[in-house]
Image 1 (tube, rainbow, N blue to C red):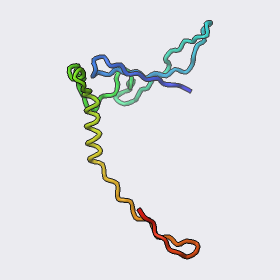
Image 2: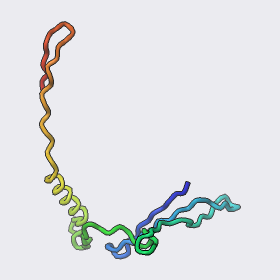
Image 3: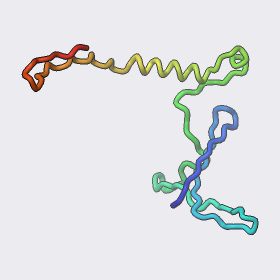
Image 4: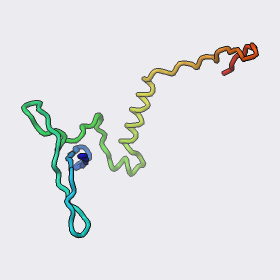
Length: 117
């Protein structure tokens, strides 16, 4: 089994540098510890072949400045933007249909019953 480990590092709050490498074995040490070394990564044959994932993280869908003056005032601009987007998505989502009435059923004695909502 080849475990892969990913990490994202935010250098300026906007740029994301990412690494994703695989380690397939541990080299044991005398003190009970171990040493690992990266042995695998992802590449693609697209555009003549190049390594992917390495040194490029996930590009944000929305860039929201994390302004210290707003944080001191008790605001979290990133959280507020996420809530705004979630509300917009909820407003656009189709409403659930009303639950239908329960069907009429006949009991083993032949009595007809109707459910209620």
